[in-house]
Length: 149
Image 1 (cartoon, one colour):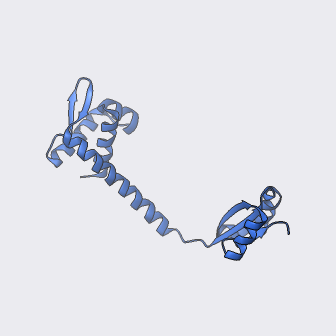
Image 2 (cartoon, rainbow, N blue to C red):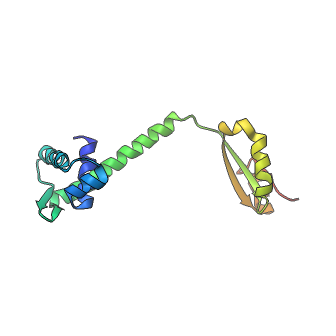
């Protein structure tokens, strides 16, 4: 079973039509899509769709299979994203806090000073009042804060 079979089946089930799924979602020819769905049904060994002039409906087996197909696709997507994240080097975090309302005045200069380092760090910015900024510095939640004394 191939992932495209699952994607095709999901599209047909959600559209309720082989023609609509082929044209609008999958950008393929309807006869090719029909063949792919038949191949999937043959591999599974049960009918997943009831075909009629009005479109298609899921059989009971199709309803059950749809949930599993969606889960399988979601797992593959999650795996793909996890692999991409693992391949990216982890950037150290740098948390900057600004006094509420003063971000516009200080953010440009802060980013200018950090300059080339911004490519190597994951900078987060927060906007808070002076007591929260002081607490963020003392707790280590913020690396630097700009606020009035």
